[in-house]
Image 1 (tube, one colour):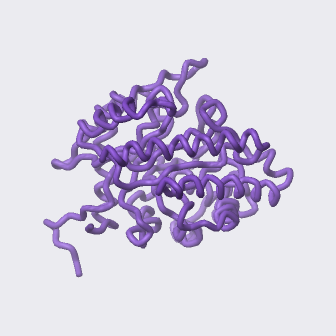
Image 2: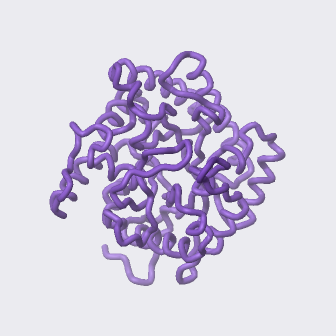
Length: 350
């Protein structure tokens, strides 16, 4: 049955990520300073398209936005702040990387213990937000926290098994808290750096009820191109439109059954990074003329069957945008506009 022009889907809820104010930012040479949580919330709340606004935010659990060791009282104040803008909290990003709370999921016992501690901290914070009422859905995001693929390539099978062992322990922790983990597919993280490596890892973990996949459109575009694993590339430069969609369908069909969290994004085909977060898919503005993706059409491949997989929201990810772009209100209006189009084309009602 065709939806009338006056009706509107209620799901997925539309979220904006807070971490573009942090990722790639810092006080190092050539870096721009972080943007506060309060300012990111203001900019998100200021976005409006034909009376429609964002429904919520996704949130990185680390300084300067949040101390992962914050008390319950401090976390409740943050929840009040977010709820004061009319927002829900959705998916949370665990501070699993070296330099935050965690460390590599692939290294020695001490490193892996730190990784698991970061997951436990994230689950605890999720519980505070859930009890408060500001959070009613979403997952906890992780990755291998092993930057680059050089070490992994020394023994791919053993190293994938090692990451999988850590992820299984993390998934058990999350399940005890009533949470699900989503592993972010991104070319910079070992064991997750190609669609094939990611699929192998998910199958090795083999806990689909507790650990799934987070698809980010900017990163998965580079999966197609085989940037960090050329032998499994599904596309070659100079591809035709028909070749692109055939390859896209092939990739998504393999990863979609695992997909429990989804980032709407754009990519111009370049690899980009800043600070300690280097050489990954370049996120572009929603209306970037160099963007390689038809955002609305490509989103549909990932969102097929999303309701059955328990997804209730989608999130925009614009990592490593310049601060001047982040501070421009029109940037967020354009992002909200394309997300509304995604929901109109592929959404569902509760």
